[in-house]
Length: 103
Figure (cartoon, one colour):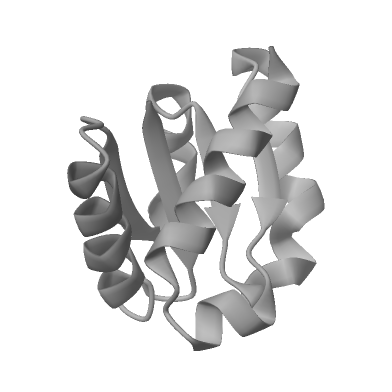
């Protein structure tokens, strides 16, 4: 699965990406997980299965959904608590659930 995280500058999600990658590896899953800034997201969305938006960017969700719809990519906002706690395993489960609901 390909999981794209989007935030204002692509930096505040980088630690979360690392924690999600660690959780996936521990579970024997080979996922591609990466973070980009909002401005770069449109060119990355076609390569994603799931787009997770940082809570500070929740206002961008409807735009992201429009961009993702032609590709069948699921989009949602990461929980503020999970994001703030950098809870990689929990955000990974959220991404998996989102992807499974899209099928």
